[in-house]
Image (cartoon, rainbow, N blue to C red; front, side):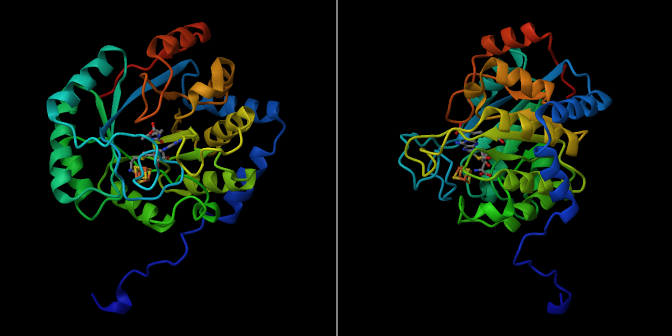
Length: 329
Ligand code: SAM
Ligand code: DTB
Ligand code: SF4
């Protein structure tokens, strides 16, 4: 291709329209009851308000990641005590997926601590995806940045969703990560979408960002076209040894506000209560469901850190009269 015709690589990320940013900022600033009422109203227009989806995570390749994401216990640059594990074998992954299915999960999400997979990694993950898919579960993978063609290989193996988070607002991003750009992330999301995979994309709250910067993340997510099918909202899990280990406590009500604004701005997306659920407590989680969260990571472990016990989740949902969504795969 002639250089003049080549797509311009943007120095700055494609900005969300200013109106979206103002809309998100205004939502986050609403009186709490007004925000929750609006979120619950939108939620009821699109979903059964008493239904939640269960997704179980498995770290299929752990630790030793060359990236410098300031929140992450798996970066080789942070001394967190995470033990490196190579890519898991098919049988072990299948055992974990069968156990997740037996305990009620309908989606199985495989995470790898890579900057991005090599083509030989993709071939091996494709085998894992086909095996999990054959159990009748929805499949999801989060493997880092993808190169041309890799998303297609995963799709052909039976992958339904690819998770790749924007993590935070473009203007705060550089405080947290220096080894990949915001635009790199948007490029991977484009590849995933162009391959016909469903997109799972969200971010993290509680890394020291301002409320306005949280609005910036929401504006970016809501401006993805089409909007992501799944939006994981994580509260930072502060892991000893990471640069964000001593970050200040996040006000749980700010987290609830984020969930509510995500629900309003992305009315048809599954909004997932993701990392940090343990710190929210039962009442905090109940408010998140009221605010329109309708998916959780389910099972006692996220990737390397803890998550509520499945039994405790089932008990909480029963107290709230919430039932699990049946599988669609
Ligand atoms: N290495 C791949 C990547 O970064 O794209 C995939 C795995 S990575 C662990 C997936 C996501 O987990 C990150 O984008 C981030 O949003 C989330 N995450 C990681 N550590 C976290 C923490 N301590 N607290 C909350 N979320 C975290
Ligand atoms: C997402 O948004 N959160 C999940 C999943 N997608 C891959 C990961 C959370 C990781 C929390 C830290 C850990 O357990 O290592
Ligand atoms: Fe690596 Fe992903 Fe952790 Fe960043 S978030 S250090 S890319 S495993």
